[in-house]
Image 1 (cartoon, helix red, strand yellow):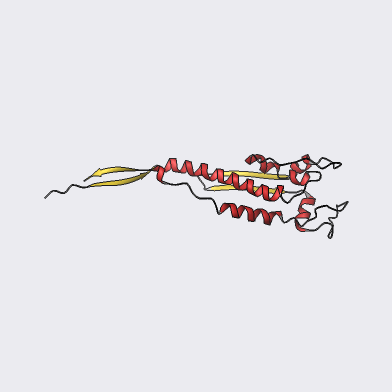
Image 2 (tube, rainbow, N blue to C red):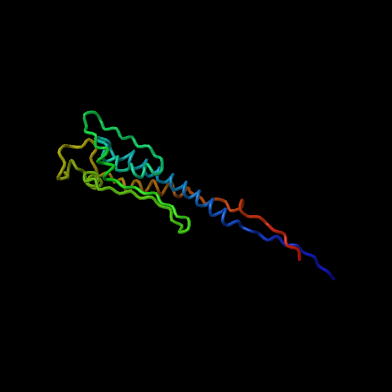
Length: 169
């Protein structure tokens, strides 16, 4: 007796899937950073001289996010001071599975206002009352916005990268 059979063997184009995954996660990270910047720099951190908000500029430039950096009338323009006191990175490394963005600041009054109501607990260098005193808590609010967004991110489908090969036995 002779039995003929054919089998379908799946083949995954792993290189193409990894490239698609990298592009997908890089885009998702850029969107996450945008959501984070919206929740922190735009919605919480006020603009007077624009220094505090300008600390977010290095990160914003990595993801194409446009920050409003115009000081209010009669305020000094401290945009350059803010930029000099802020850092931001956007890193992706598909081989290591690394996708992250970072932000940090050394701007003294932004750091103080993150944790204190400067109208009640004044910064030693404060020279006037704030219209929008802290504590800003922008780190917590940014984390919450990032977390909400990250829960909506799915991995790309594998199906477009799978083919089958017929094997006759």
